[in-house]
Length: 141
Ligand code: ZN
Image 1 (cartoon, protein in one colour):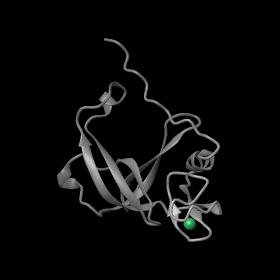
Image 2 (cartoon, rainbow, N blue to C red; image 1 turned 45 degrees about the vertical axis):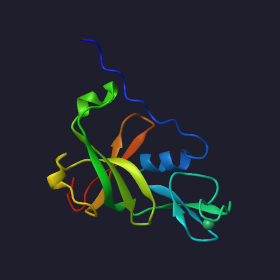
Image 3 (spheres, helix red, strand yellow; image 1 turned 180 degrees about the vertical axis):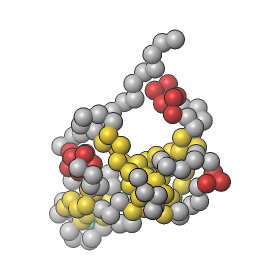
């Protein structure tokens, strides 16, 4: 049988480098507008609410709630060995939502409640890239 294709890895850009460097250090760094205080994700050099370029990076708490999810049973070849897994959109405590995977919980809708409290879990996938995943809050490990 042919070897499964490798998963694609994110490629940091100048705009996203602080985000990826933070994850490597176990920090979830996102941005905030200094003019209107809006926190936002994904990284951009301007505020998506008021378009100000007066923005800054800060370290988010890593706490979130489950906004929505889907249990993936059929995946692209590079992800086939992972099924079933949970693709989720989580809402960070600071407000922005991000797409991620849930870990540390069965990929079973009966185990997953909307708004359930989550916390970040860092997954090193290469020497340079760490991905933010989320697990039920207070789960340890
Ligand atoms: Zn703003």
